[in-house]
Length: 85
Image 1 (cartoon, rainbow, N blue to C red):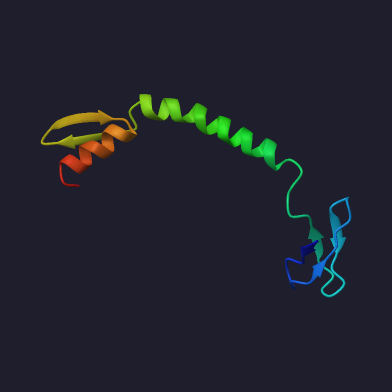
Image 2: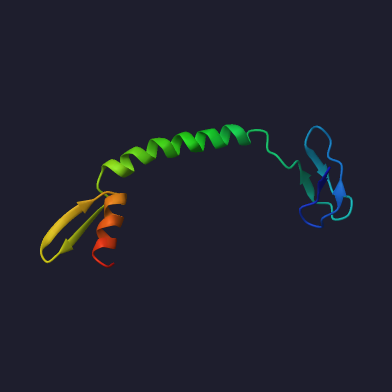
């Protein structure tokens, strides 16, 4: 059982996962998508891979009184907090 996303009518959706609402004639889908777990794992793996270079390579340079300092994300946050920004 699922509800229509447009009008809220509660109806049974067949195993194929698609139905049409008899009240508003919109397409009703199953609540869970078939490949949602695979998509979640792919996004998690991509985030883990992107996390490493984001914390190893400098992403910002602060120039203060003619002295420049390159910082990663975490060291930049700490630098800005220590200097009152």
